[in-house]
Image (cartoon, rainbow, N blue to C red):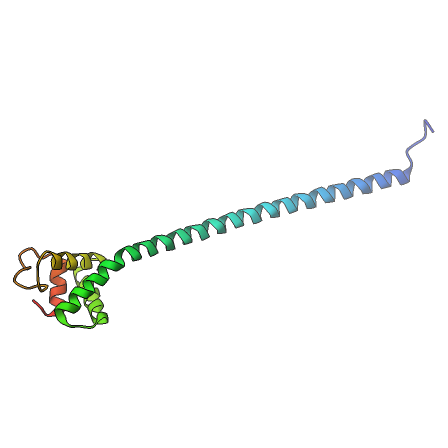
Length: 144
């Protein structure tokens, strides 16, 4: 057998096995690429979900921090004008829009003025040091 040519059946089997190996390598590479793409999409979605969660958390914290002062300002307006809680908030909201200030900032100003001794918003006691935000609420309540 030493000088004889290779068996054609073995050559065919070898070529078939090599082709099958190449096809399996190609499929493994495709699977690997799909896995990497899936991992990247998963990371991206996780990052977006995390950012959304953090953003919602920050907004909720800000709202919870500003809620007490808004409620206090509503109480001041209710005490001074005799309006209902919803009306008091509407007064704050519309005055906030007119003065172009955030409701929480306007509410803080209302509370600060009430604590500092101004009995009625826009009254003679508080006009001297009134802020634009406070004057906006005063105009809204009909007190000034």
